[in-house]
Amino acid sequence: MIELIAFDADDTLWHTERLYLTARQQFRDLIGGRVSPAELDALVHDTEMRNLPYYGFGITSFILSLIETAIDVTGGGISGAEIGRLLVIAREMISADVELMDEVEETLAALAEDYPLLLITKGDLLHQTDKVARSGLGRYFSAVEVVADKTPQTYGDILARRHVAPERFVMIGNSPRSDVLPVATLGGRAIHVPDANTWVYDMVDLPDDLPGPIFRVSRLSEVVPLIRGL
Amino acid sequence: MIELIAFDADDTLWHTERLYLTARQQFRDLIGGRVSPAELDALVHDTEMRNLPYYGFGITSFILSLIETAIDVTGGGISGAEIGRLLVIAREMISADVELMDEVEETLAALAEDYPLLLITKGDLLHQTDKVARSGLGRYFSAVEVVADKTPQTYGDILARRHVAPERFVMIGNSPRSDVLPVATLGGRAIHVPDANTWVYDMVDLPDDLPGPIFRVSRLSEVVPLIRGL
Image 1: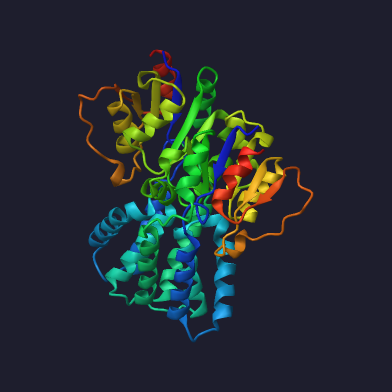
Image 2: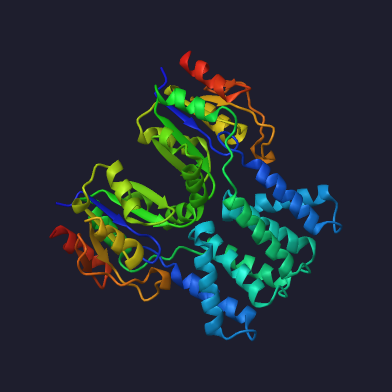
C-alpha cells in the first residue's frame, strides 16, 4: 500500500539538461581552438565536481564553473567581455521557458486523485521554486521540497517528517544517482524513467541487492498502472 | 501565549555582513581608479538589485554581480585573471568560519527549554544548511527553513503548515525588511535586534500601524524575559 509518491523535477517533469547541453556547446564555441572539445569538457567537469561543495547544484554553480574553467584554460587571458557572454548565458538559462516532458500533466492528474504527491528537486532554491510556479504543475503537489542534495538521509528526513515508512513511498525520476539509488538504499520503491539527456554526474551503476525494489519504465504514463498494482 | 519562536540566521545568530563588507572593499581595491568608490558601490548595488530575480540571495549571487559590475565598469577590459580573484573571494566567503554573535548560545538554550525554535533564513540552500551544521546550533532548532525570500506569504505558509496562528508566533532578527516588516504585517510578533552591520537592502522604515507588535532589544539575551512576559 503506497502512502506517498514523489517526483523529481529536472528532466522528469520538464526539460533541463538540454539547456545545459546548449550552454556547453556555446562554451566550446567561445573557448574554441585553445584545447580540444573533449579536453575542455573534461576540464569543465573537473571544475564542476571541485565546486559542488562550495556552490551546490544549479545554474549559478554551473556558470561559476564555466567562468573558472575559461580563466584556467586561457591562463587568465580571457577578456571580461567574453566572460560577460557567460553571464548572458546564465540569465538565458534561468529565464528559459519551462518545457514539460511528454505525458506529465495526465500522469500527475491521474495519480493526484489517489495519492499525495511531492516534488523533490535539488538546485537553486529560487530558480526551482520559480519553475514550479511557471510550469503550472504546482496544483498537483501537496508540497515542494528543494534540497541541497539527494542522499538517503535527505529522503529519510522527508519521510520521517511525514511519518511515512520507506516501503510505502515511491520516488519517480530520471537520475539513477539522485532519484533511484538513495531511495532503494533506504528501502523505498524507485521508478526510473530514463531520459536520453541525463547529466553524466547522475549516471551510476545500480547494485541489484538494494533493500528497496527498482522499476524501470520507458514512458512516464506507465507509472500509473505500475503504482496502482503495488 | 507564544507557541513558536523563529530566529533569523545571518547577522542574528552569526556574523555575515562583515564578510560582504570585506569583499566589497577587496572589490574596490581590485577595480580602484576607474571610478570613485561611492560610484562603484552604487553600480554594484544596482547590479545586485537587477540580478535578484535571477540569482536570488546569497554569495554566489553576490559574486556574479561583482563579476558583472567589473565587466561593465571596465567596458569588458578587465582580465580573466582579475575575475579569477573574485572567484577566490567567493570560495573564501563560503568556507569562512561561522562566528557566532554575542549571547547566542545562552539565549537559544534558555528558549529551547520552553518553546519549539525554528530557524528561517534566505540565501543559498547549500551554504545556509552547511553553516547551521558548522555552527553547532542545529540541536536547538526543531527545523531549519531556507527560503527564497521572506515575504508575508513565506511566513504565512510556514505558520499554516504548523497550524500556528500569527499572534502566537515570534520572529527574531536583525533585518527590518525581512524579519520584522513581513511578520508584523501578518499579525505576528517581531523582535528587532539591530546590528551595526546590516545590508542596506534590509533597511526599511517600519510603519507604526502594522497589525502585529514590534519590539526592539539592544542585546540578544533580552529576548528571553521579553518573550516570557508575552
